[in-house]
Length: 76
Ligand SMILES: [Zn+2]
Image (cartoon, rainbow, N blue to C red; front, side, top):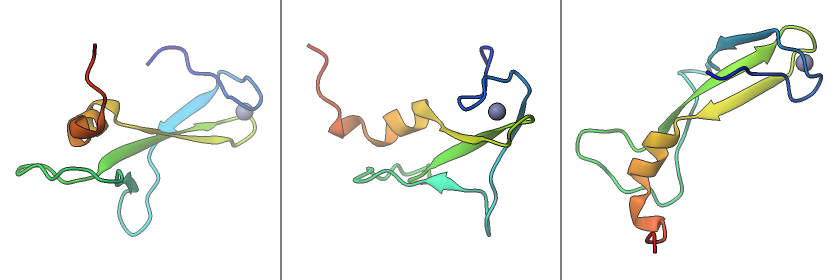
């Protein structure tokens, strides 16, 4: 990961982790197509600032792309 900084306070003391509810939290994209071997959701990860507690959630961009390719405009 490139140098992550807290979006709220600018601190560089960021802890990596993930958010868990009943299971790990994931994003289910609107209109995602179903892949035979894959679940139709995007796993997330989280980082938390050690200074102010700000939590940022990041999703798997590659996975989202695979799930929603039909929705994306053709490149040129
Ligand atoms: Zn912070």
